[in-house]
Length: 234
Image 1 (tube, rainbow, N blue to C red):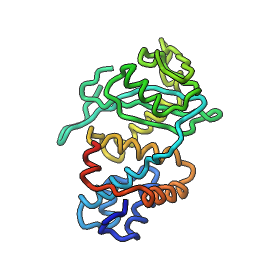
Image 2: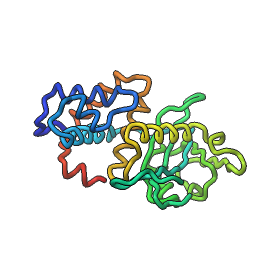
Image 3: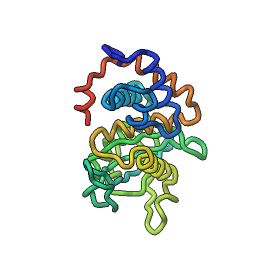
Image 4: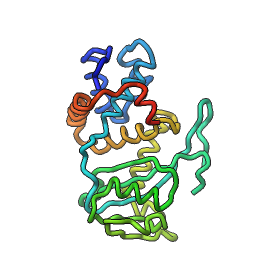
């Protein structure tokens, strides 16, 4: 990750500390001003590399009792305002899963999906939830044929969804507030990287110092992440 970087180690360490421990994270503009970097592009690439390092290739899938649901957030194009408004037009689709530990949330996962089909949602569950776990959903047809997990559909009906699946909806609400507060709305480009940042910080919300140490470890362990590779993952 540090391969051929023109930035000093002190800058990398400070950037990692700010991004990992700041409660709401930092935008590239905030990082640019905070570190006194030469250009916004330098700050954007530094932050993008740190987000890339926030996904541990060897991380364990969620296990046990897991709430799963999907949501959408309005997006904005270049120069466009945020659009208001299960229509896909003008919205970014996201699947989420929350591991329930005791009476509260443990680890979470968020991922961009193309639609609410069984293929998309089944793929998300298969990639993020361990076999043998119990998946609690709202009974949406896209979850009907999940494999290798026990499915516990709880049809919402007239009951508010946040009462049936309280923790995944709380995570969705926090993610949306974070996106609007720090970035004033998200765009489709690099959306997964933004979600990875939110997940990294949420999963280490009680141990910010450990989050900093883990991020530094991943930055050092991961291979080079050149600009062209990062932008090709939009």
